[in-house]
Length: 41
Length: 567
Image 1 (cartoon, rainbow over the protein chains, first blue to last red):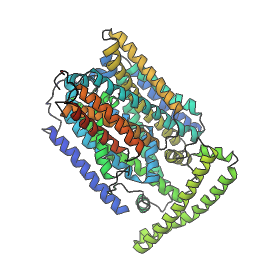
Image 2 (image 1 turned 180 degrees about the horizontal axis):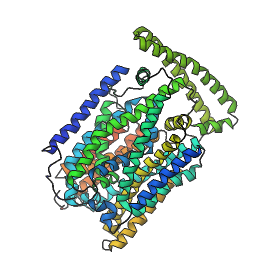
Image 3 (image 1 turned 180 degrees about the vertical axis):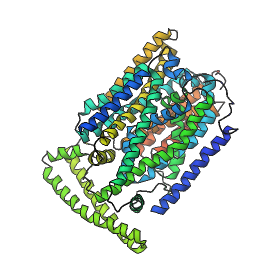
């Protein structure tokens, strides 16, 4: 691996945007699963 | 199995081995053997990370878990995306900066040699044992359902992959894992499609989901909090986070995967993409199990899915009692079929009263069936005292072997092998790299030629392969094997993670305090586990917190030798 500690991430300007995307996706999945569980129970 | 199944199985496995051998070329030193010259693109690293985590147990046990316990096991993965973020932000930049071969090298830089050695040893201990289970798990299931000899199956399962793992090192492991995962995804998609297709003509996907849900199998989210409950959203997010943080951040079988990436960005991308795809993937795998449950409401299910055990009981003096139980069990089959049809009619009519009545009737029949299944398990234990009566791991493969068309059965059996090989190969590679870098090169032969190191690396890959097969030959009575692996990991992961958290976050703590703190924490974790006070996922939290706590308490008491500055 090259020693570029502050490399620009793909698509976004900052890594924090990627982190927010992953966390946001998890929250969306949990909400979806919650309603999925309620709908079919 | 038919000739077509054998052909598909043989061709698939031979193709993978040849591909692995072809990728084995060009190994010259430790850097190429254990890090692939740090040249692997992020999407291959991603598939390699997923292939390492998803063993055959994932594809056999997870649908069985959904069949017996519902889909709440999915919550176990909720902490994983959060862990991917933390590892990308904190762990990977440090490993990248120090150019390490193993995660444990960093600990000597931060603390001292004994802390590095202790952590490496804990890793080797749990990874070698769990790799043995990873070999045994699919072998025992295949041998029971297909009548194969368990010893030869273990040798076949754990032996063939050693060829390309030993010669090819990490690059061969990563590229074969990518191909293996592609075949696995295709096979699992076809299996899911076939479950729905094999249902009665008037039952569609939506009907199957509603029936499964009414029977409590689509319970993906459980919000009730209990320390003893294995899978709820709290244990999943908190316990799962600590487990995933330790597994992906400090377990060399995973660290070794993303250290092969071309640069820091590609390492991070592979981990973050894993955070995006893992939970939906596990949801879909478990959904297959929930649908298999519906399939067996319409069609005859065995009294125990481990047919090998049933056959053995039928050959014993307990045969008449087993036949009587099977007659009682089969007599409920017609009742269940009528009740599930009534439930579907009520669901189509959206008649809530009729739905509740049919649901209650079907649940009562299911309870009665499960009661007879439990009686059968008791009888099996009497007839075969050494037998493992849990049939969770056999459910999905029983469905595959008895219901899927010729050729597809062979493909699904091949998937079991490929999934096993992917995770076992990565584990052997990590066991060898830790042995070589943290013990052989660090303590035994610090100065040797590239050729000698390469030869020793191949030797240790072979040794760990043989050891793991040996563990597999002695493994038995472990219940749900996916849980057995996770419980074994949870006994050590918390402590290992705690050492790394202290290293990253508690800058005043030095080697002696963290070393003795970790030993005390490990004793405490094993004591808590043996006391059966909490569910195993919480052991990860307890181990990590205790290492931090003990280290903080011991730091003022124990001498503090000068250590290097943390990275």
